Image (cartoon, rainbow over the protein chains, first blue to last red):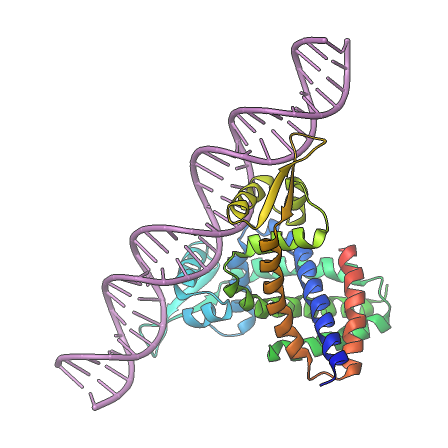
Length: 147
Length: 147
DNA sequence: CCGATTTAGTTAGCTATGCTAACTATCCTC
DNA sequence: GAGGATAGTTAGCATAGCTAACTAAATCGG
């Protein structure tokens, strides 16, 4: 392993890390109007994009949170009519959590605000820049899986 | 404005947003061993990289947090010997907050863990990939300023 | 130069979100 | 069917966010 390449990797990792932090810090501002806390918003996002109902344990794992934390979050979200909780057919200990129409609509509206503000910042870029960023996101998704 | 370009911008914004979330979600795992909460770690990072002591209000603004929240964080961090608080010379109402040696060391060790895990994921990339990612981070930093 | 207003930070008290330990109910294994 | 494993909940605690109300210092108007 060449030392110079290794050094470049560290330097790039540092800049990538920093850029991701600053990007999300800016976009986060859009969530203040959502009327729902960040933990619930994030859990709702997993539910909406999972395509199928999830068990409590699956959802907790996806959110890197312990089961009791997720248990309380979904209980609150059920009271707010953001998710529907049904007992699992095959295992009476387990529950299935799915977003309601209201939950889905609320999440998509919030996500739209975030993506919109980023898309607006992208509009001064030319097509070559968009191509380049697109390929980099591809690479990025591969390396995220390797972390 | 061409509709197709606008659509590409939204699509890219969506993927970029998602990739940033997943990247930080993975890297965050490294912070569990730091022995310090995420809010303190982030505030300490601002202090270490600012290059000068900051007032409470400056630090709160940088962290997108209200003054009382930051007040409590820095009081706790002072007790833990992570920062030093000195009254400002020119304005006796104001305070200056700077990291201690211990605070700086703790932050840098934590950051090293994060960057290291990302750098390792980068090592299978060839030099062309690194070049491409580097240019994209450049672009990304420009657009973050436009958000 | 003095009273009124503004500004910087703190304190009090609430909410949201994280944890571990201990519990209940169900499932699975022998 | 008894005993252990597994899914979720409950209780109690810590951290981190907020607003409202306060203290003290600085500034401004007359």
